[in-house]
Each structure stands twice: as C-alpha cells, then as structure tokens.
Image 1 (spheres, rainbow, N blue to C red):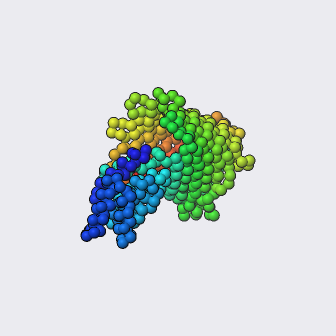
Image 2: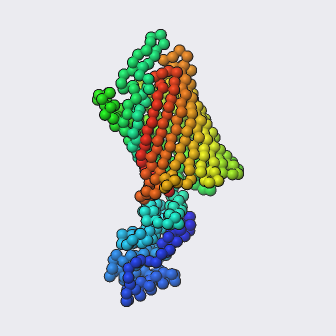
Image 3: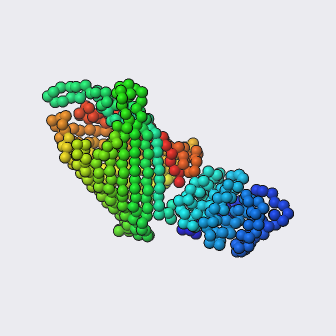
Length: 451
C-alpha cells in the first residue's frame, strides 16, 4: 500500500520544477547540490545543505521541500511531515501548494498518521487544475482510506419541509359508529425548517484478504424550527418536541464464506432512540446478508434482519421487526448505476393498532457523467402497508404510497473535496383511514464528499 501511495505522490510532487524563486550565486549552487545529493541517494548530504540554506532563509520553499524528501529517505516521516507543512505555508502559487500538500500527505501516510494524510490530500484537492492531477489526488486519498483502520464522518443539513409533524392531509377523523370529528391544528401538516446531523466513527479491529471486522458508533439527530404559519396555527409550538435522536453501537463482520458468490456479512446493533428529548426505546438488531456476484457488472444481495425494540413504559410498546429484502445493482456500459430493491417488513407489537406489514419496491439510478458540472441521481418507489386490525376501523387499515428522492451535487464547486449537495424527498400516501392520507416533501441542503 505504501508503495502505491508513494508512487502517486512522487508523480504529483516532482511533476513540475521545484520552486519559482530566482536563484543566484552560491545559494543556487547549494540548492542544486542538495537536489543532486538527494537524487544520487545521499540524503544526509542533502539534509546538511538544506539546513544551511534554511538558516539564512527559513521560508525558502525549494529547500524545505528537498529537506522533507531527505527526511523521508532517512526514515523520519514524522519530522518530514512538519517540514512539508512549513513548505506549504511558504509556497507561492498553486503548483507549489499542490506539491507541498501531497508531500505532507505522503509523509503522514508513511508515519502511520492516516487521518492527517487524508486531511492533507483534501487540502491538495483545492489546488488541482487538470483532470490528471485530480485523478492522482483521488487515487492517493483512496489508497490512504483503504489502509486507515479508522473511519470518521460528519454530516449535517438544513431542509425546508411542509409536514414535519407527519400531520394528516384530511382535516377530520372518522370513527365508525360515532361519526366525523375535526382534527386539532397540531395534527394537521405543519411547515418549517429541519436541521439534522449525523456522525459515524468506525474502527477495523481485524482484517485480511478473506475477512474484516469493524466496531463503531453511529449517532443521528434532527430538530425543527416551525414556520410563522405553523406558530400562528399552534401558539407556543416548540420544534424540539418533534426532534429525533438515535445512538447506535455496532459490530460488523465481512467474510468470503462462499468466495465464488461474494461477501457474507453479519452485523449486531445495540441502540437507543429519543423523541422530543425523551427516551422512547432501546433496541437490538441482528442482520445477515449475502452478495451474489455475476460475471458481468451486476451484484444481487439478500438480507434478513431481526430487530427487537424494548419500549419505555407509558411511551412505547415493545415491538419486534423482521425485514427481508433483495437488491440488484448493476453498472451499465457507460458507468451509470442502476439498482432495484424489493423488501418486506413485519411489525409485531404489543399495541395491536401498530402491528402491520409493509412492502416496498424501488428503482434507483445514478448518472456517471455530470451535466454542466452537476452530478445527478435519484430513486422512485411504491409501497403498500396493511394493518389487519386498527382502532379507527372495524376491518383494519390499508395504505398505498409513492415515494422518491432526487439529488444533485455541484462537483465544480469544491472546498477540501466537499461540494454543495441538494436532496429532494417526497411521499404521497393514500389510506382507507382518511386521517393517515398525507403528502410530505423536504429539500435538504448540505455538503457531500467527492472522494
């Protein structure tokens, strides 16, 4: 892995002349001698010469650059990374910054500082200009990520939504034998802004060509800021009352049990859910999946999962959830990606009105080639929910719904490898219990990594 990364960075750092400063007299000769010593396998001599140059001019880019390379050759990558960082601060222009950032990433990688190597490559991405430079930086970043046992991701977004409280589209509710009653304003759709964020911390505790084991922590939170119309409809409304929080500890093991088929994965989850700031339930979840690779570009995945939710008394009943799904994914000849997913969920709860079965069929598509610098993709699906028993109806409840998502990433606008992203989600649900017919839509704005 180090050799692959080193070759990539060497191309990046040595593909242009070192420095742009004019050199004269003995200073130019000493710089040339330092570079020659490095090329001829004499890093000690190169180090001595660059120290002399830096004693007179501490911010000399080309001397700092050669000194960092000499320290790498002397098996001192940690100090080399510090010197490369000084070179980055002393750089004049895009080319020098790109060279120094990639050299610092190489040094951090060889020192085993993978997260800092990734950060330096993100800094390098700010100064790429050609497609080849971009490919080299991305290739180096992916090499570091594969070697790094630690994964850390943060996400956040803001989303205008027309129904953050999951309110009923119909303003009334019908009780068989009792008649129709008007719903209160807080049970009708309320608009506002959703704020959300998530965090993933994952560590590879063991790994080989045949298997890998990860442990991790995932956390998610969202809350709302009601619109002026929502505040007028429901005076005193607090968006935090509709907030959601999830904390999930997990263990995941991937193994080539059947190498001729594909990866077998088993995962264990233990988590807790909060709603409106109140603890609602704890859960444990076990999932097993199997990939089936086809000779072309397709992969079929089968998954079964069992989740047991332990509700907090007076807030949530205990619930068992069984999920069975199959998904087919394929890359087309033009590298567009298409996927089809069919799933069934069975909810079995102590509260009979919340026991139901849910079926979904969805198709997703992602375009490989951006249009005017914008990457596009999305999904569209249909679903059916069936309640055998329901407290508002004598013959149960049945919902049919349409749902979808669409996303756009402005790849030409990139800072540290992150680009603006917009996600539009919607659901249109019809129900034979009119209170549960609803339309929801949200536009989420955030950042997406382009690596």
